[in-house]
Length: 161
Image (tube, rainbow, N blue to C red; front, side, top):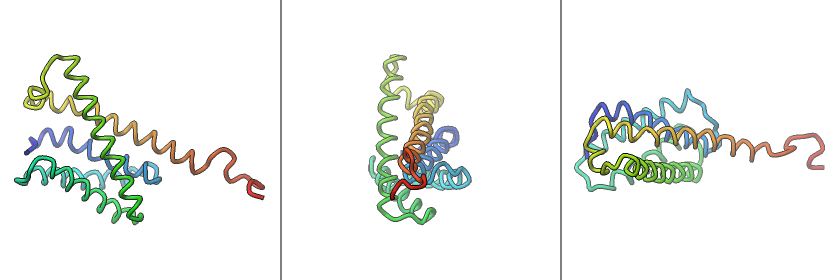
């Protein structure tokens, strides 16, 4: 299923960067934007190219999932379990976000999902709540992971005596 170039540029690339941000945050790397942006661009280009292949619907999601895990592992040098955990977290986040926001948009506007998907500009606009959601999740995950790392009183002298 091909994606129009303008939709990829205005919605797909930001979403891929959001995916990278969530992966970094869940892995405990924080939000290093100098690493997240190129990683997101790599994801975005790959996602775009995969959509051009004549493969059954849903297979592209599996291929993209495996690709993000492998690229993230290679770029960050993390172990495979962290890459898989980060990949699963972002997959669940994207699926939940897309389902909630498209259902909300259908409810509010009364338009069908098919109509939204077939209208280029509505399709782009409909994807932006999910992009925003990814960045919110990335920030929240960073705060949660940092809180777990530091904890109340962590690192204070005499704590573990």
